[in-house]
Length: 418
Image (cartoon, rainbow, N blue to C red; front, side):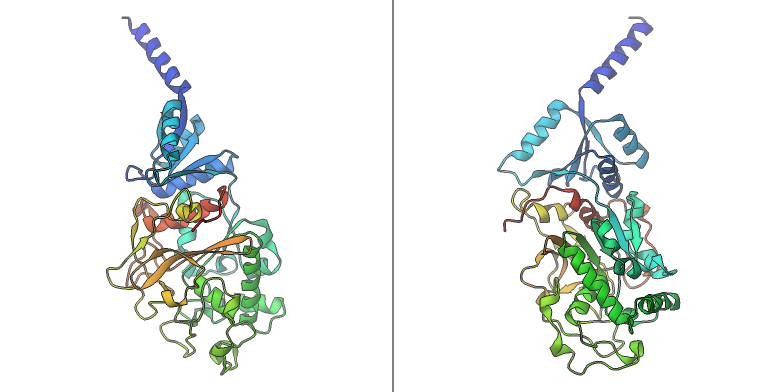
């Protein structure tokens, strides 16, 4: 056989292979070279107005996408592992997933959610926010987002977005209960916004912001909060009309009957919690935080994700997709949620022996997820001002939980059965 014939046969073989290439499978098990950037690929395809099939519990929650050369090139550029598979292989995978005896399901993702992050980086240097896990992972996965803060929310801008992340905010108006937490610039920026909107105190302005965010969620929005953002959001709502801020922060004293005046019917996730009204106490706000004195449940602690039915409980099954079900605990101002304060109608998706770490609930027509801790790969016992380099953690199961939530609004969802 001549060299020319061999070349022609090779080209014909490649053409035949391409014509039978039905799909690209992006595996999310241990064979994936970069789990976090794989989510960026899925979002990239959704932004191009194409669909993505999320294969729940199939090889760690893999993505199945119609083959295109553009997609193949994008995977190579971003360092994401992929497999080009034929029509027959695609059909076989889907048939396996549809088997009623296996805990798998295929969810169609359509239309990329418009992502917004609530953060003081909008108005001040906010060095603390350089370590915000959601900002870090959105940037690393190359998922576009916008930033808003109090002024934009009070103006009604949330209506432009589908998915909102609350950074590690203090919605009680106490500036994190520690001046190391917020810079002078951060505090002045919040006071300036409060004055602009005719609020006498920052705490009053923050309550208005929290109520607006609650309305966004109830109207059909998706809310994701971590660390103190989750805890203080509910505290502010429960304390509406009650002064829980000591004079250090607002010039007057706490209502002596503050604890008894809390209204837990106004909160999203927590109830029957006791406020910490003693000023500086390890930056603690309440006993919602199960580990306010220590920063984590135990020095070598782990929490476990629940295994939900992909066919019957599709929502939580999406939110816990991972290649690992046991995840290292990580600390924060609010590290974990006390089991006794979590409402009975809240769905716990990740828990340890002494606390709940990852919870979900519905509010009106919307949904929310709260996640304890500051940075899933953060250094225990220090280094909280150091931004994590996700190039060192491309397989982080803790960060994967955040990205599950980013894709969640794009799914055709079914109501939870159990």
